Image: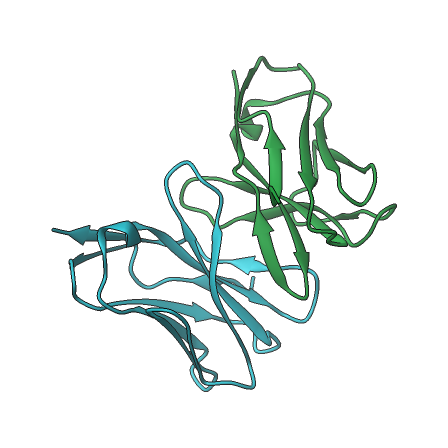
Length: 111
Length: 110
């Protein structure tokens, strides 16, 4: 079946470095993508989104890149901080009410 | 503005027991969702409600029922709990694609 997947289950980065979390999607009909952050014991929190008519979108310390040619999505976090430690996952919306969620990547920030 | 709230936060049930998970949102959103989250898997949609009075099955609806009581509230009921329903349950609401999630209910069925 069609699904959203992540390449790296765990990513460890030094505090202050940049983090890059990747996601592959398979549904070419998807036109909207979201990155979520989920801290332990909490619900997913919206970070940033991007529509398929864009290649890049920037937020505060975060950038999402979309490569439709290879169906790839990435989340870049600049100057990673201890508070960024969490599970990050992407979601795609194939033009329906249904979102398809990835399994997640755990980001560990090393002091 | 509390966003999406869920009760209870934790629950332990015995096989065959029933219970209702409550969800409410104060953002005046039309769409509401119930998901379950299991280790190693992405969020899976149980039921969806596009607006008050309407509900639709998601990916894993078996063993669950829902009620969209009004625009604010969307409840999930387990009529006869099974160990396979041990999971963390999240309610969400959305408007214009962006979804807002509640804090979750951790349910254990023994």
